[in-house]
Length: 170
Image (cartoon, rainbow, N blue to C red; front, side, top):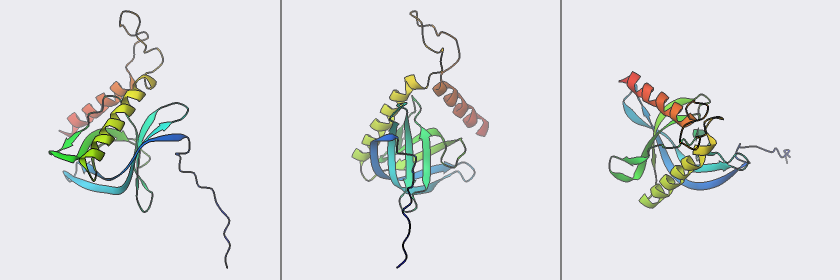
């Protein structure tokens, strides 16, 4: 009988707590074809890092465990029902699943409307958690509500980039 040595495999999730873990089907909108393409079926997770407390979204395909979506949850991300279907939600993000940052429009479909609402709450809570963590140093407000040090927050910069990308495509 062949004996194999045990190999420790790291997923990159060891230092994170799971805030939500539900099965879903993920789609992404492909501009060139002007249609939704299935990205995969698997576990949809909202994770929070134990040390820096930042929240991210991770979706791995069920059988291959290939990463299909991986991004930091940005504060203020709008999540809405897709075409009146209460089991499907759409949102914009800057995704890093293919090891390069690019803006994506995702649709996540769940088995029930309750699961979709759980996801929406966890995703929005993750954005609220990240809001103070993503502000650059010197971006704090003084007692009169004025920013000290100028500069915009990371969320504003990403939102502006997404808006510009949408305008450029039109």
